[in-house]
Image (cartoon, rainbow over all chains, first blue to last red; front, side, top):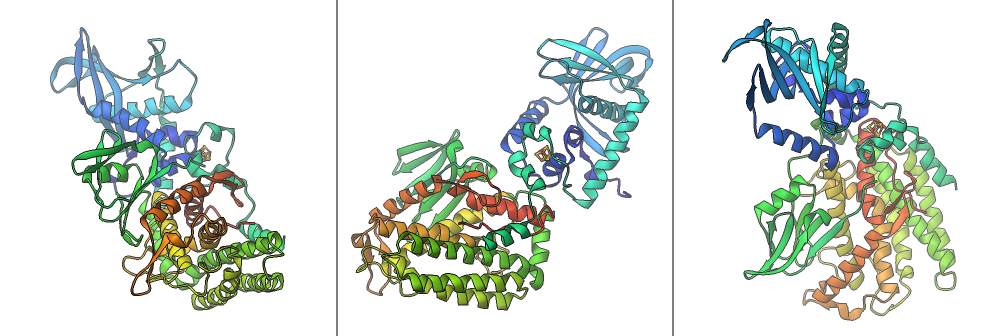
Length: 219
Length: 343
Ligand code: SF4
């Protein structure tokens, strides 16, 4: 992957699709086949955000920035952080238009209640890597904010976690380079997949077309 | 499989279509005639020189609602196509295969296998259901000859030969087609296919049904990201939706011909529904076109089980299912393209 131009960057939000099912990710991000629900949900998401980029609030020691576009040269991913919090702290970094020093935390908004989900964690860690690169700082802590219970949960973003993000991103780029929609093992998780009508997971276990035709001719 | 939505047929030529919120509004001389929510629609088919606003076209293109403009007699004028869906990789694969005669033939033969298989099913069914009305011996002969053609075609990797086989098979099928017309024989008969213009009642109906089917097929292909204009069996010709015609081969008999036959045999269309022009061209009257279209809509809603997917769906979704399967084959998910084999 010699070419490091931003055009080769993939969508950061694809990380969660990729972890859920590589085929789903390929259908959305390579083939751009998506069903209305995925498209509209993501579309609205983006819209709300881009309508108000860089809205910043000052809350005492805290600077809260919404809809912050981020990217990473290392991961070759780009996307938008829901919320990034800058907390005044002597051990932090300087920002170009605010006095003082800050430490940086990405915050992801979740509609429901807390549930253990690696995909979410990876997403947050990827945002952290982007922020580290862009601001030349360390991002060791992030938060999930659960809308339903109006509570936030602190997550520690370890090097180990970040390394696994690097592996996944590399994998994603390899698939993308080949523009290949993988045939993957289908499973019960397909039932909750919004792309099942396009993917036709049933096809994966179907008999060969050759035997379908020969069979029909023999009957 | 996704759900089949409705088609809006606009048969009045002096109507203008515009967008209002999520609705299509039909206007005639500043007056609003109807208003229909677009989320219920799969496609809009306009007859005559109906107009549509760019706003409506854009809205529909974004949501894969096809808009087609036909002349009053159903001849194709134009289709509104938005930004093409799907990755260019799929289209490039399609173009690459289209340029390769042998690879094209491997796919094309399955379209023809499907066509002959289905035509044979129609013949067999007729012979079984109406043994007192049709010449069973003749039908058995046609059926047998189709079967042997199918076997040859399965092995054929040459486009020219393939077309030859197809022409051969068409003769056997057409020979018994007239026999399948069981009612109103004085006014409805089939001698041979006449297209431009259709010269008898049956040909007028066949032409109309093929146009409708070709439009559905083209829209379905574009929806799954394929280029409806680049074919494997039909070679490129400007303005011709070759791939739509290719995939449609399987469905001509089982979808369109059967539909036309049932309109005649159930006397839903009669001799009064047609007018003959001075030049011998036969046209459907405005009223009969409406009858035809509403029967077509009903046909599309009818359910059956897709022979390969083994899934219940409406007839109207078959073009979409085949388009999806073709895309899946081009993507490398399937060992061959599975034709729609109706029993
Ligand atoms: S239906 Fe199953 S295999 Fe297909 S994209 Fe969805 S999760 Fe993946």
